[in-house]
Length: 315
Image 1 (spheres, rainbow, N blue to C red):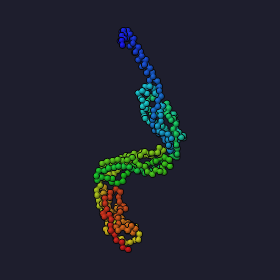
Image 2: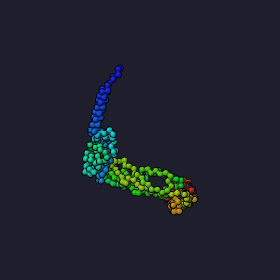
Image 3: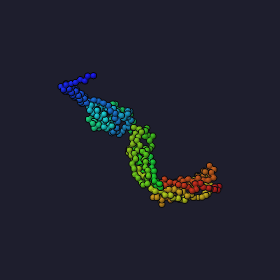
Image 4: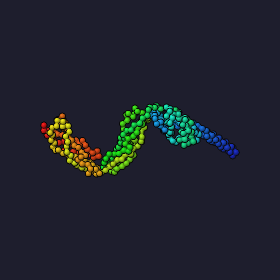
């Protein structure tokens, strides 16, 4: 194929033509990017300003499509990234209505975007809600915990919650089934001293049920434990015929772990050991089993010696 040779003037004309073509493409591209375009971006709704006297349940998902208007430059570089990823919706209209028009809140929605992009509409534009009468109930808090202590250490007295109840708000039918509310799992390891932590309450699985406060303060008293043994007299229960029953032995040794701070305080008056006469009269056992009917919650039983005792019944 023969090589085309161009003169100096012809080469200059070709380069000028190519330069003009590139400038025309750049000008067209620049003008195209300056034009306005509408694109869709998904975002999550966060509700605020709940009506105080009404419980509600949304009848649609909490995700909506924002119709966003922006230039081609914004579309090219932002790639539909709208900040924040969620928008707040004011529910104050629900005090008198059963729906909320998002088109009425476009100004506040655009203020949340912190962007020159503009939301021109939302799909769906109308949010519908199912309403029931709203009521309030106080329920106890159930602490869920996984606490691991260093050897010889443990909980020395009752764990204290502040507050010890939560206020649950929602429909009467839902609240009838709620008698307590659990916390998130409190996980602690290698504990050897008293501690105070804040634990979140579990989130409500019902959108029309809310709780307050969302967290609780947990005070965990911790102390070193040591072993202690007390001699406890036995008491006979269920001796309905008032038979004369003699026990051998009459006392048992109860060995338990107790916190050092309670070592001197815990004595025989804190523990009650019993045997049940029904074991002889009904079950026909030849020995009584020793059971503790009163025992401090903050102590840990190690053993009862003996755990069974002989007896003689004198009619």
